[in-house]
Length: 360
Image (tube, rainbow, N blue to C red; front, side, top):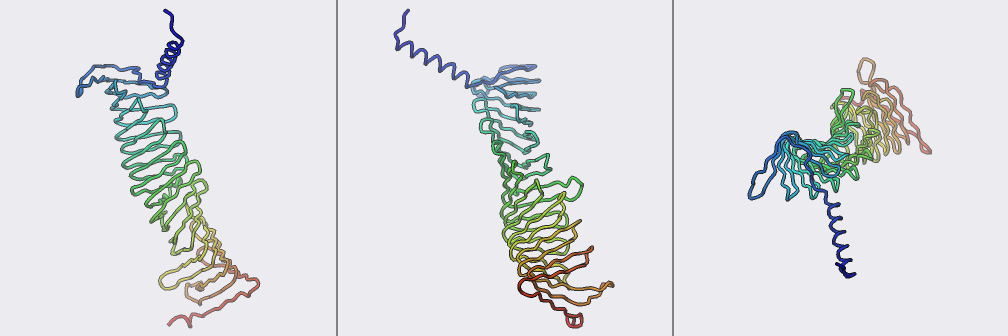
């Protein structure tokens, strides 16, 4: 039988479409099961499989101990020892529903989604192999196993394409001290993380806790690679009977321990107790610290320092009040050992008030 030219073109388009559809729609393929039977559920024929159940779809491999396979819907419900691997990520859970048509995974109970050094855990996780995005719900935790940092919250969204995630629902960051010290914890209303940039940003009612140190601000940006914490929006930091405040504060950490920092704009440090208080003010204060103890403090731009002088027996000698363009303080232990005041072109000023004139 001879075909007319138009008929032949239509036939070619039709058959090409069939092959294209078959190639694009990779259906789920059963590889193994110890036992199988067909059951009827609400008028639908479901293939039940038990024992070492294994499926494949493209590069994705699915395994469990019990599965219910809806062939028409291209959907599997996997139970007991669920594992899904697509060549790059691996998902573990007690139960999961896999949609073959959309390549989506909905996992429940003790869920772990692992890729390289990242691990997302939650009560339930929805993941799309197509968009490479995951949503975790209930006791969610996203660990960076290299940086020893975790992003936690009741809800976590993670995009594998951009290595970006955010957490809501009482979110917080934990930076584990690998030396066994206190962990650094940053809390707020919303938390975002960029894995490639090693950056986490916490916003709204931020609180930071690290052993005896705690701080508050509106925004906190934590750079995990160089252990640098930036605080913005009326920040205050409380540490070792000291209060630090300014327009913004940079906190430097070494192995999660406070190693110094910089206070920018309207910078103030107060220290002491309820009886005697020393006050440092300026527009830029730089601190270097070892083992949580000040070694050097430099105050610049309209620098002012009011500090108490004590004798070796601990008795008060008097109070110094000094002003200058730049004040450098050096400490030996907890005691002030050196003060240098610089000014240009104006002169430095200082006033000493003896104990007799400041005590009642």
